[in-house]
Image (cartoon, rainbow, N blue to C red; front, side, top):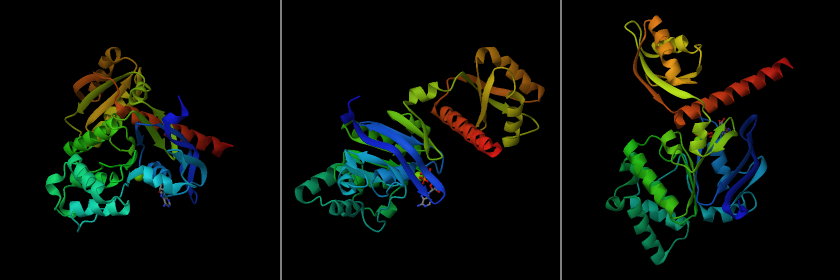
Length: 331
Ligand SMILES: Nc1ncnc2c1ncn2[C@@H]1O[C@H](COP(=O)(O)OP(=O)(O)OP(=O)(O)O)[C@@H](O)[C@H]1O
Ligand SMILES: [Mg+2]
C-alpha cells in the first residue's frame, strides 16, 4: 500500500490521566476514503483517541499525523482539514437552525456567496431545508444530530470525526443519518466514527475494536465475524416455573458444559449458543434444557453477526487481561 493512501496514522499513541491509561500505545492507519469504525465498551478510549486526532489534546507519548500534519506541532493546520462532531456536541438551543449553521460559518470564516451556497446545500443535504427557522432546542433528536453534522461540514473538510453521532436516536433517523454518511463516503470524505451500534459497525470499511485503551482487533466486519468459530444456535428458553434473567442463567448453566458448546451468550430473552456443529449438537442441547424443565422455543441456526463477534472478542480480551493480572500476582 502506498503511504499516500494513509490519511490518519498513529504510532504508539498513548494518553494517561494520572494512573489511568486511557489510550495505550495505539498504532493505527486509516486509508483515504475509508469509513473507519471505532467500537468498544464504555471507557475503552474511543473519545480520547478522537480528541488526540482532532489536535484538541496532546498525547502523553507516541505520535499521530492527520493529512500529513503532526497533531502536536501542526494542530492548527489539522483543524482546517477535519470536521468534528463531538460526543457531547453543542448546538445553541435558542438559535434557529439557520443561525446555528451561520455561527459555524463565521468560526471557519466561510463568507459571501460561498457561504450562502454552502449553507443551502448542507441544509438540503441534511434534509433540514423546511426547518431553517425552527429553534435548535425544538428539533427532534435525529434532526439535532443532522444539524450538528451540517455544522461540522461547513468548511468542507475531507476528514470527518464523528463520536457516537447517533446514540439515543431512533432507528429510522439513524438509518437516514447513515444514508447521509454514505453520500459523503461517495464524495471521497474519510470518516472516523465511533459507535455502540453493531449494525453501524457493519457498514464501515474497517472496524477497530478498542478495549482498555488498546486496539485488540482491527479488520473488515467480514473478517471480524469470521474470527468467531463455529455455528450459532439461537433459542428462547421457556419454563412454567421461572422467567427473566433467572431462567436465562439456569438455561445457560444447563448447556454450557455440554460437548461441542464453545460459548453461551444471553441476548434479550434469547440464548445464543456457539457450537462446533449446530446440526450435530442441537438434540443434546434441547434434551439438557428439557431435563431442567425448560422448553426451547424458536430454535434456529445462524452465523455469528457483529454483535456476537464483538462480545466474544471482548470476552477473550477480558480473559487475557485477568490471566495477566493473576500471573503478576503470583510472581
Ligand atoms: N479528562 C479526563 N480526565 C481523567 N480521566 C479521563 C478523562 N477523559 C477520559 N478519562 C478516562 O479515560 C478512559 C477512556 O475514556 P474515553 O472517554 O476515551 O472512553 P470512551 O471509549 O469514549 O467511552 P464511552 O463509550 O463511555 O464514550 C476512561 O477510564 C475515562 O474515565
Ligand atoms: Mg466516548
